[in-house]
Amino acid sequence: MQSTPLSGPQRGILVAVDLDDPKRSLEPELDEFEALVQAAGATILTRMVQRRDAVDPATLVGSGKAREIADAVKERGANLVLVLNDLRPRQRKNLELVIPVPIVDRTMVILDVFARHARSRDGKLQVELAQLRYRQSNLIGTGADLSRLGGGIGTRGPGETKLEVDRRRIAHRISVLNAQLEQVRRQRATRRSAHRREPLAALVGYTNVGKSSLLNALAKSDALVADQPFATLDPTVRRVYLGPERFARVVDTVGFITDLPKDLVAAFRATLEELDEADLLLHVMDASNPDRDRQRRAVDAQLEELKLDRKPRLFVLNKIDAVSGDLSHDASTLEVSAKTGAGLEALRAAIAASL
Ligand SMILES: Nc1nc2c(ncn2[C@@H]2O[C@H](COP(=O)(O)OP(=O)(O)OP(=O)(O)O)[C@@H](O)[C@H]2O)c(=O)[nH]1
Ligand SMILES: [Mg+2]
Image 1 (spheres, helix red, strand yellow):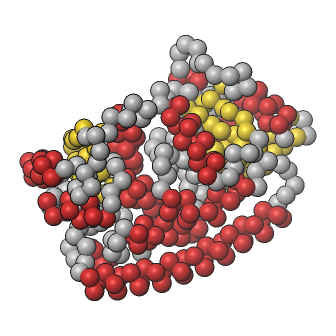
Image 2 (cartoon, helix red, strand yellow):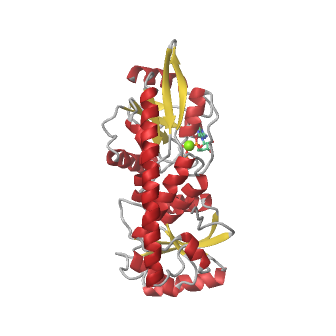
Image 3 (cartoon, helix red, strand yellow):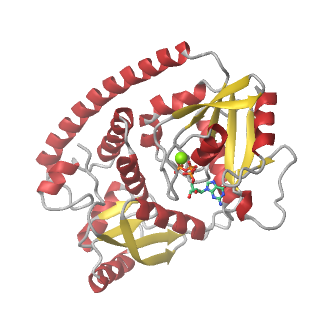
């Protein structure tokens, strides 16, 4: 069951509640959300941002604003409402009573992008598991059943009994997937122990910073590169020349994002375990992105969560070709460009020295 809730020509209205947090400006998050929505194949018609001191417990945005959104949906011919903030099941339900089109939150969009980009069998299993867990904890029925009811994700849920049936089916499918992924995990672990010859460095970092490009530049390979979030889902390992008779294996894997859905992290355990084996982390950042400090903090938090924050780490600022002027950072941070090749020799040397 790989339903893609955002397939077809989807035109959405982006909705967000701005809590005016001085430590967390909304603008970069809105831009990032829009990029995610585009990667999921939908277009944003307009943004509706509501400033509030706190989210409304019943409708997130407040009932007046909910009606305004419903009007805008009709006026603009939108067929989707995309909500940046976390939606509780009750808030979703109440909004659905007022707004006549599917309501999709950020987690669903991220899951959808992952569903579109999953290529390998393992990747597909992991995404399906994450989707089901999310539906289970948010009391959303299975995608197939929802579409038979004539809607996509976010249409009013099936009735109680229907939901019960759905729940049992979802729970069963989840246990099947868990068993299959456990097998994947064991196979990967066996394969890894058989390959322990050369040291392993792992590229980690926010999505779209150029991790795959850097791997390609270092290994002269051609892993998929794209200007969109989550182009890479499956771990790719390449052998990289460090210096005379010195090689390392370098693994490129899924990128991180602020508030990466926890169901997704849990489902991607098999993939993320590749990182456990790494002797060194190469934390790649996008020097050209004004939002890079926020991105770096999100990656730090994610590494901590994955208990990888104690690993030796090199900080690598990529895309320096796209920056004019000086970048302020500490002396140990390396500046490179996967595009022009600048700084790659220094990076090879730094990896060799760290391993
Ligand atoms: N100007 C410039 N662009 C770069 C550089 N490295 C990567 N890019 C561009 O940045 C975008 C993302 O590159 P990827 O290598 O796919 O990034 P990634 O970190 O692997 O992204 P995900 O796998 O989606 O998380 C692409 O459009 C690349 O062409 C660089 O050194 N300079
Ligand atoms: Mg990539």
